[in-house]
Image 1 (cartoon, rainbow, N blue to C red):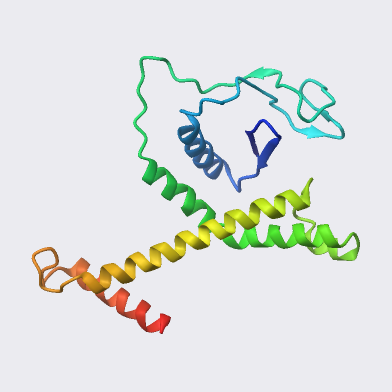
Image 2: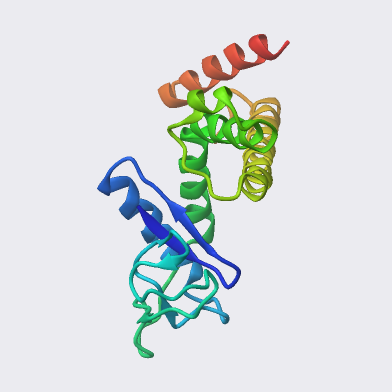
Length: 190
C-alpha cells in the first residue's frame, strides 16, 4: 500500500504485490517530477481513527511530518517519454478494470445502503464512497475513451494499409498476422 499525496487529501493505493507497487510509484514519480506544486512534506503513515498514526495530528489535512523524497539533483535532466508512461498507466488501469468496476459498485452500494448488502463488498475499505465513486467513474470513462480511440486508430490503419506496398511487403509475416487479426476484429465488430 502506498499514498499519493494531494493538498486536499491522501489517496491510498493498494497494489497486489511489490512489483505492481513499484511500477505505480515509478510511473507516478516520473509524471510528477515537473509538478511545480509538489509537496515537500508528507505523512508516512495512514490517517485512522481521527488522527495520523505517524505524528498523531488530528486533522486529516494537517501538513506532513516527514520530508518527501524524490527531488532530483539540479544537474540531472530526466528524459521522460510521456506517451510511453501514459501508455503504462493506461495498461495498469485497463488490466484492473474489473476490479475498478467492482469498487465502483461497492461505492454505489455503500452510498445507498447501510445494511446486509455491505457484506458482498467487504473486501473494499472506502472512507468516502461518494468521492471515490466520482473518481472511479472518471477513471473508467477515461479508459473507455482511450479504448475507443485505440480501436478507431486500428480500424483506420487497417483501411489505409496497402498489402504489398513497400511498407508492408507480401512476404512480411508480422504484417500477415496483423491483417488476420484485423480481419477477425472487423468481423466481430459488425
